[in-house]
Image 1 (cartoon, rainbow, N blue to C red):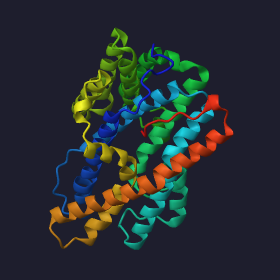
Image 2: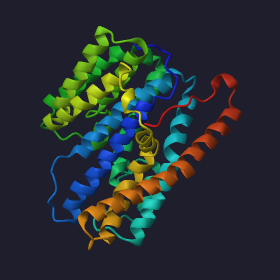
Image 3: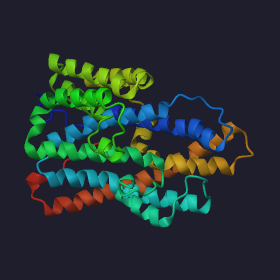
Amino acid sequence: MIPAASADQSRIAELDVLRGFAAVLVMIFHHTVIYQNMYGDGRAPGLPFGVFAVHLFFMISGFVIFMTLARTRTALDFVVSRFSRLFPVFWVAVLVTQTVVSLAPLPILAVSWHDALWNLTMVPEALHVPMVDNVYWSLIIELAFYGWMLACFLSGGLRYIELLAGPWLAVQVAVAGILSGYRIPQALSALLLLKYAHLFLAGILCHGIRVDGPTPLRQRLLAACCVTHFIVQGVAAGMFGLVWFALFYTLARRRLDWIVVRPFVFIGTISYSLYLVHQNIGYVVMRGLAAWPRPVQLLAAAVSVLFIATLLTYFVEQPALRLIRRLYKKRRPPQAALAAAETP
């Protein structure tokens, strides 16, 4: 079983680098493949590596959220921790993106201000409201995972998470095989993490390996997660997944510190804000430079969204996080102080 408390309390820089790597891959994918398909001539590589990079985000979340809950005293600690990390900068990113797209409308992607305000819930799809930016789809999956992990925390199930992993993977495989011909409602699929539970579980298992060592059960379950990835996501995603699993296993064995380089850590630091603002704002920049060579468009879009993400990180995300947690700590007894955690 994974231990109830983590001995690895320090911030793990390798996670920041992997998070930044995934965010940049998603940005490149949207600025090349998707943009060309929507607004260009369609001549772009068809490999959806950007979607596959989101799978790496989910593995990181599994690792970080379990690490967070392992040292969380109350459910409210966890809720405030996640809220302070995710929502304030998300709200600002929604409003900034909506303002930019309102001033320079994007065909197909523009939404009304009424719908934009509903996006502030972070679950617009569940409310049947179009998303201000399509990248928000993954945040709904994240929130569903948080809900399941909070339920495990409240029920005492965190201590038995490895025993639950096998049945959870079996359900995923069964649904992928037996019910493959049926259309499962998207909301139900997201709630039950039918396409992504194995990725979160892989992150949890790697946390256990890093903290307490690679037991035979953990290694077998991690291999099962990898096989499940091929079954549920397909061969192309599975091949990329092999890279993600290898990277995470190396991180779990504390042998990935060679990737910790200051510029990469910086990208990881701003990765959440970059993920939130890169797509539609990048499209606006590229459309505004439509007469310029393609490399200039890509460079201008990348520089623009990196700059905006930096401002959001250092002037919204981090100050809001510190303020909310400081206010929360003042009203909580010292023994229930809020645990610090990396951003998923």
